[in-house]
Length: 131
Length: 128
Image (tube, rainbow over all chains, first blue to last red):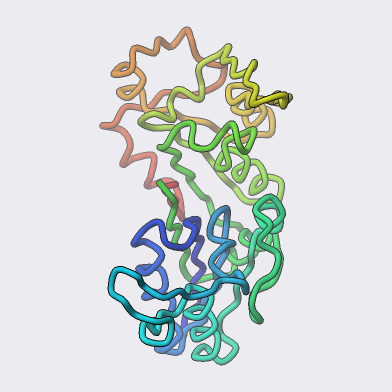
């Protein structure tokens, strides 16, 4: 099985690349690979524990009816599916300047040095930047 | 032996006032410091990063002044001093009316035609 490192930058709800990245991570862990995620800049907001779903006044749906997981829920689900094969680092300085330090169980605080160590140890690295 | 990495930076001036720098130039410096063999390629609007004499000072919101505006050209010089090779796509500079004489010393031009040869020298190519 392979080890893949992915760098993400986009915050939640701004671009389709987040969903694409989640698809890649999920597919990789389901196939038995190990995945490292380095969340840089706005991507540190993906794991914020205080994210909350909301009702939809346009559709007239309640929170329950919307049943709309936030990005932290998707990430928690991937941690569960990965069974120890997903490592997620939030870039610490990016966390500090965004006030994004209250995150779900699973991710940990880190730095570019962690990304470099992963790069050297991984079979492949994918950078998904922001535009 | 460690992996050789080419960082391609394309978007220029993305949140550089908020961050007081360019976050990919910053990351490249951190990578170098962590021991990664990293080279930088500036293309498209980011070729302007190598233009000497940029001045983003003087910005104020209410009574709060931006005390440390970004100094992108100096950050490029700092990368060169740190041993990071910095290339720029010469076609993109010409297209933007940027003359070689306007650029910081030490950045290396490369034509679009020659890019495949450059990319071939690296184990990893990351396009930011």
